[in-house]
Amino acid sequence: MRIDRVYTKGGDKGETSLIGGERVSKASARLECYGTVDELNATIGLVRTSLETSAAGPHLLPILHRVQNELFNLGAELATADPAWRVKLPCIEERHVEQLEHDIDAINDELPKLKSFVLPGGGWPSSYFHLARTVCRRAERLVVALAAVEDVGPLPVGYLNRLSDALFVFGRWAALKDGKPEPLWEPSKT
Image (cartoon, rainbow, N blue to C red; front, side):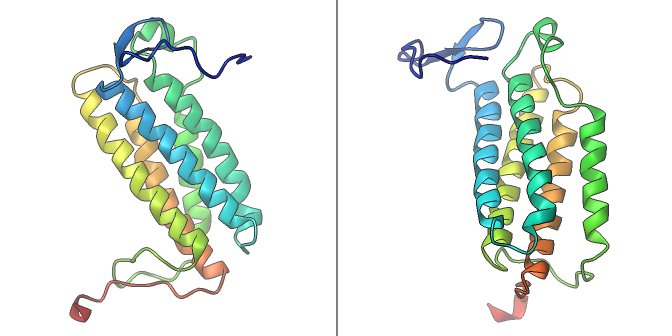
């Protein structure tokens, strides 16, 4: 792929092209979905940068690099309304969901059992993981809403659901590896 120009002026009137050429409003639900997946990818970029000096970095950085590529594939999948075009593109497959499950299981076994809800915090990497998790949950909600009215393919919702679980577990593990206390919800402290 080669991108010669950053701007095309094609969206100056509030429309853009989906993959396949269909013109749609930039306020469409489909654009909101893949725009939020793009935001999630950028947030994971923050996580990766914060992990460069973290004890959790050597293990999690390769996983997140893979996830960022998967999110780009997911964005392309969501940017394609026509199923005939979608089959020509990289897309989320069951193996991607299964790999996330494997990643979660491998790390979750090391974590202390939870006795309360976790508050975002626990050091920079953990905090950024929590931010990414919330963006991922928003993307998931938007894709669920889109899937109720349009075809989005079989796996985007499940992938985002599993990814948000992974981001939660990764955030807890980063706090543990960095020796940071994991802030827990204390209802009586209000």
